[in-house]
Amino acid sequence: MKKDSVRHAAAALLLLATASQQAVAHHSFAGQYDVAKPITLTGTVTKLEWTNPHAFFSIDVKGDNGAVATWELELGSPNMLIRYKFTRDTIKIGDNVTVEGFLARDGSNLANTKTIRFADGRTFNAGSSVDLGDTR
Image (cartoon, rainbow, N blue to C red; front, side):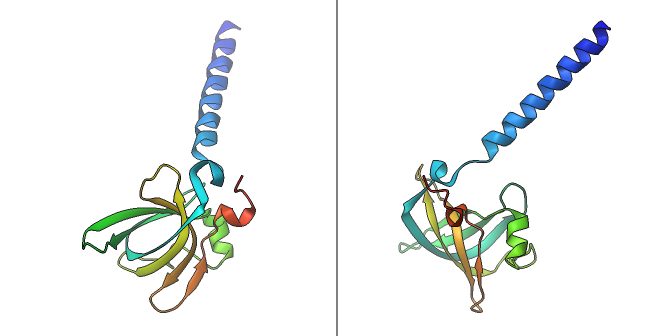
């Protein structure tokens, strides 16, 4: 009987730890990004992470001074992106893209992506949570 209680308590603690990690990982738009700070970036795709709760990709952006800066760009969930006809095969390493989005509040090279425009003119909604009204 005592062994069962210990197992149940351990399972409950593990479940609580896992749930709290997921809650921390998923954030509100307004908690991390600033709708008053839109940004447009053009660069070359260097990385793609097709994960939940948000997909991410990175681009290298050449500045006016010639220096290259890497930007991390948050997308919507893979499920939402697929509904917008944007799949993991839509974007490839080496693609040149122009991204419109919103800067991170912490000043890092991180932005929430609203749209992605490819060099061939294709434009996709990036599933930004700003479209869901989550800007408080």
